[in-house]
Structure formats: C-alpha cells, structure tokens
Image 1 (cartoon, rainbow, N blue to C red):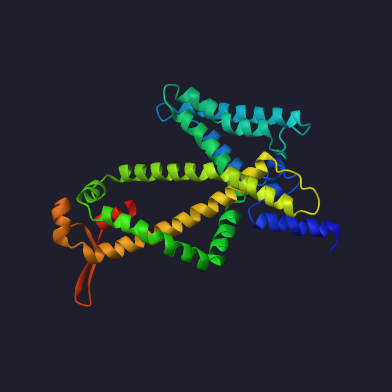
Image 2 (cartoon, helix red, strand yellow):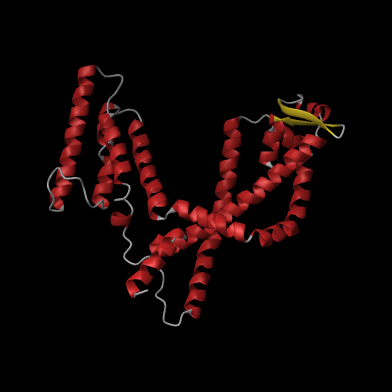
Length: 315
C-alpha cells in the first residue's frame, strides 16, 4: 500500500477501537456535530415549535410560536452571514456559535411563556445533555468503544476468570455474612424504588470517581510505553486524546465490574432461592415475600421473590 492507503487503514483501526481523536486533524465541528446535524435540527425545530404555554390563550400561543420561528430564523441568518453563506442556507459548519444557538435560542421563548417556572432550565439542561450524547456517540465513538472493550474482555476471559477465582471467594464470604443479616433484608427488601435507585447512583458515582482517579496515571504509563518502543520520537498526546484513551480504559473497567456484579448477583439469587425459606423471610421482614417463581428441585423447594431480587441486587 502507498502512504495514503496506510494512513487510511490506521485511521479505520483507530475508529474501530474507539480512538478517533488520535486521527490527525480530527475536528469536533466538522467530524462530530456536522454528522449529527439531522438529530440536532429535529430537536431544535421541535423545541421552537413547542415554545407555548397551556395557560395562555390560543392567539397568544400562536404569537409566541411565530415569534420563536422568527427569532430562530434571524439567528440562523446572522450565523450564516458571519460565515459568508446565504442567509437561509443549511449550516455547513457547526462551531461554537452554532452550538450556543442550539442551546440558548429555544430557551428564550420559554423564559417568556413560563417566567416564574423552571421549564426553561429543563430545556437548557436537556440541550446540553443532547450535545454531550452527540459528543460521546459521534465524537468519541462510544458504541465502538463498548464493542472493542467487550471483545477485549472476551479475548481475555480465561485470565479474567482466573483472577475472579482468586478474588471472589473472600468477597463472596464477606457478602454472605451481610446477606444473612436481618438488617440488610429490612433495609433493602422494602426500600422504595426511588431510594434504591438513589443508593445505586451514589455507589456508581463513588466507583467512577475511584476509577477516574487512576485513569490519568495509566494513560501516562501507556504513553511512556509507546514512546519507549517507538523507533522515531512520538509526539505527546493532546488533552482530548488523553481523554479519549482514558474513556476506553474506563469503559473496559466498567464492563469488567458489571461482569463481576452480574456473577455475584446471580450467585445470591440462586443461594437465596435455596437458603431463604418463607418462614425465615417472614421472621426477618414480617412477610413471606411477593413470589415470582417457585419449584421443587430434587425434593427441595426453591422460591424466587421480588424481595430476594432487591437484596441480591443491593449486595
């Protein structure tokens, strides 16, 4: 292959591995947000046409929608003229000004129609969330990262299982002690779904912060290792490239955690179906539980209850 073909082959490998930011001259405005223009346009138009208040009369809402459309058209025209394009042309470059307009323009009519409410804040945060999702999906190729990380875990499953065999017994032994305590069942079996979700979010945030604190050092180690093996001086990674590499590492660790979590969850569901009978559960939480499944295996009754699922998930 000639040089251009080799470069194109390397770039395809970067994209498949979820590392598009290692491609030279990769631009967020041209390679990320431009690709997501149809999605951003649909969200933008929907918010502009939806800028009305149910508390207002029909004629007032019509005026608000017309004013919103005129405002959006004027902003688009100004941005196009600023780049030397026709006033009503479809934007060909989504830079900082265009993204700021996407976030702020739909908010302004909602401030007028719901001045004392917080609907405008919801729209503002939703638009920022859409841009973040676009950045992850189109910019960092989050789907490619997950696929690559899953393949890595699959290819290294034997070594991962060996590590789990060494690490899990102590962890499971500690968790079994918790699993067989009245307080854990009283806490999680009847906890409200919202509270259980909040607990899961708090634990997840702590885990992500713990992993995130290790990622910068690992990225530096990878960069130093590559530089040591390179036959020519390797340019240092830019900040966004380090973020891209760190996101791949974090995704790999999160998938490993989910794999171990699923294994422990399955173990405690099976263990609880055999070990926790109706009388034991009734003594702990004053109910025999909401039964989801029951059977008799080798003469032993087994029961799956919603409370057991919740406690196993909590553990």
